[in-house]
Structure formats: C-alpha cells, structure tokens
Length: 173
Image (cartoon, rainbow, N blue to C red; front, side, top):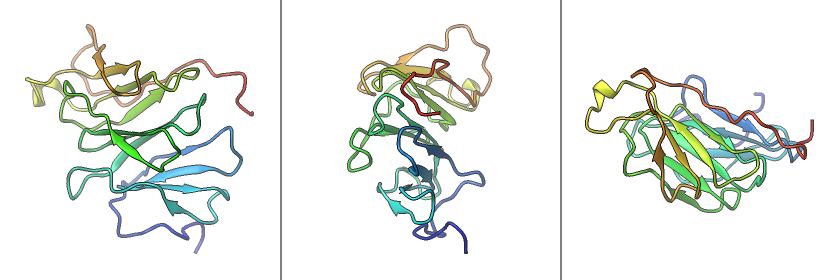
C-alpha cells in the first residue's frame, strides 16, 4: 500500500499534488489535495491539518510554501485563486486573498528566507481572461494583510514560478 496511511483518495487531488519538506524538522513533510496533510515520520502516516481550502467543489491546493525562518508558517495557494496562511503549524488557517488578485490559479508562492511575513505569489493565465483584474506577481510584507502588485512591465504571460534565491545558514543540509 505504500505511504498513503491517512490520505483520503476521494479528496480533490491534482495530477501532481504539491508538497514541501521541512528542512528544519526531520521527517516533516506537507502534502496537499484540497486539504493540507502533514507527516512527522517521513510519510509512514499522514494527518489532516486544514479544512478544505478551496472555494469551488472542484478546486484544489496548487502550491505550498513553508517559511525557512519560522516553520510554523505555511502558505497555500489554490486553483481557484485564493491564498491561505497558518502561523501555528496548521492549527488555524486564515484566508489572505488580496482584493486586487485576479480570479486565476496560484501556481506558486515563495516566502522570504529570513522573514516569514514577506511572500510572493504568482498567478497563471492571461490578463485577457480577467481584464478588470490584471496582474501576475504580488508581494506581501505583512503576512498577507495587504498585497502589492509588482508585475511592472512583464508581458501578459502566465507565470508558474517564483523563488527567493537566498538560503539561510541555519537550514540543515
């Protein structure tokens, strides 16, 4: 049966579900459908740490981003354009979707390596699909309470990646 103990096959799973490994805590991995799952034993068993984080019946979590500086902070972006955050390791989730976000999927979120309050979110799709709500890259400096559009003069093309290039020296390698 493998490493599926605790996972629910009837969830809304993407073909390639997102996961993130906690580099500061051995054996901790997060894995997502429309729920966020956590393992503390390298995948031998899983448990749910969220309610469904989608606004539609078919929506799924498309990306997970864990803070290197504070492993209690985890962001989740969905296929239906919402972003969620937990600051207590999954005990409580708060929707932090920006009022200026386009209603398109969030394929990637990256968290600043030294400050868990700073995060970047990218949106797929074309602005042609949502002309009244443009934008592809957004930044928060306050944990998602507010978001600034930082697409600048990028062409209107779907984005699928964003990365914070610096890695803290405290991360186990």
